[in-house]
Image 1 (cartoon, rainbow, N blue to C red):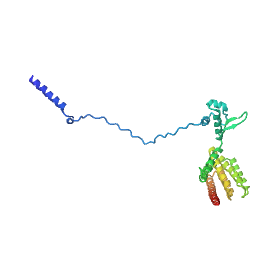
Image 2 (spheres, rainbow, N blue to C red; image 1 turned 60 degrees about the horizontal axis):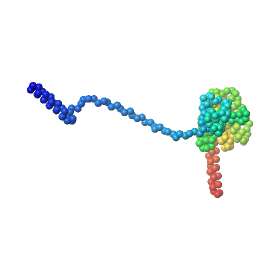
Image 3 (spheres, one colour; image 1 turned 135 degrees about the vertical axis):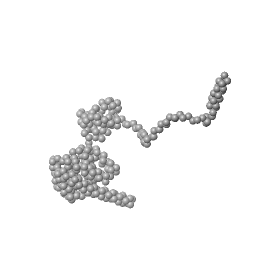
Image 4 (cartoon, rainbow, N blue to C red; image 1 turned 90 degrees about the horizontal axis):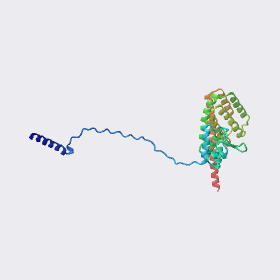
Amino acid sequence: MAGSNEVDRALTRKTTTVATTPARARKPSARRLPAKTAEPVAKDRSQPRFAPIRTKRVFEEICEQVRREMAAGSLRPGDKLPAERELAAKLGVSRAAVREALRSLEIAGVVGLHKGARGGAFILKGDPDLVTRSIRDMFHLGRISLDNLTEARTLVMQLAMQLACERIRPTTVAALEKNVDRLTTLPVSGKASERVAISAEFYRLISQATDNTVMQVIIEALTDIVLQQVEESNIEFFPNLIAHRRRLVEYIATRQVDEAKREMTEHLQRLRRHLMRAERTAAENKTVRALAEEASQ
């Protein structure tokens, strides 16, 4: 029993020693800590930009619905819209709102309004003159400079020369030659408006020769505005204009693309210089008049 008691006392002393050993004296545990997961790196990106919400006016929503139906093919040129009363009932809006929407669509060239027993609102084919008016308005308001306008026309006409040479038809060549012949009948000191009218037809024929509707609209829009400046500036008749036109028609007819581009570019750059000079002269004269009026007061 004595030996057993000594063993018990020894175990008791060992247990007490372990229990009372300070924590700092204990051997650190070899337990592996879980690996830390790398936090995702935030990507650089701009913050969302929220714009104020603006409630559309009723007539604007009506216009958008008409345009959506056109885009979907439900409305085509020549189709008649429902009568004003019927359209108002379908949309759940007032007749005044429908009337305002139709006027807006008419101004935009989307619909044509006809009076009478067979009248109403009809979908139009689209008016290319709207492009001309829009560019002309921006030009007159100073949003588009004469320099930019003439530069753009030169670039467009270079592409037009390439398309015209590739797609020209004998009937168009004949029409261009006839146009140049008409130009030869005009006196050198004739009215600028007559030369402008013949030139407008000449460029219209070239635009048609491209066989590209978008090009036709752009060419005729830019040409119309530039020729208006030619008429207002009263630029003198270019002595070599007829020879230039004859060479150009020949190059197009024989599909000489590079020569046609060069001929057209040289002519338009010469015209550009004349127009820029006329613009500077007009600005200087305006300044002189303003100073004279100020001095006289």
